[in-house]
Image (cartoon, rainbow, N blue to C red; front, side):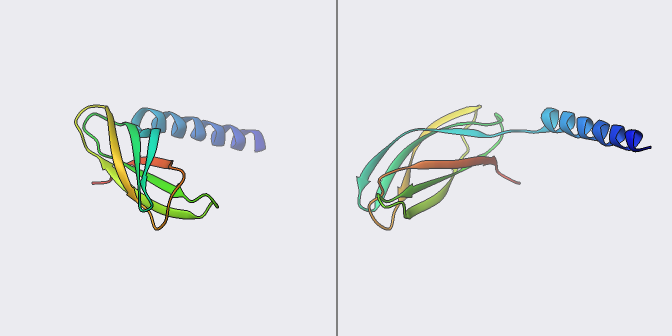
Length: 109
């Protein structure tokens, strides 16, 4: 009885995984570089891979030398095609010493 239940649970997991992989549209991003422009601004270069007709939204943050987060923003990537490389400007509350891409998702709607 327990074996049948575990088998059914495993089968359900396999079906769910297969459907997710086939139907799931992913957005991935890579931070390819950044420049500290001023005490209030960082320019980050982000490459995004997305469905050709989709819109990606990526979150970028900056931290000060002491590790305090000094800026965070979301940027939309709407260009046609599957790959978009673009420089984005992140406003900071004080001088940032880093830029980090926290993640990207497919925009809803």
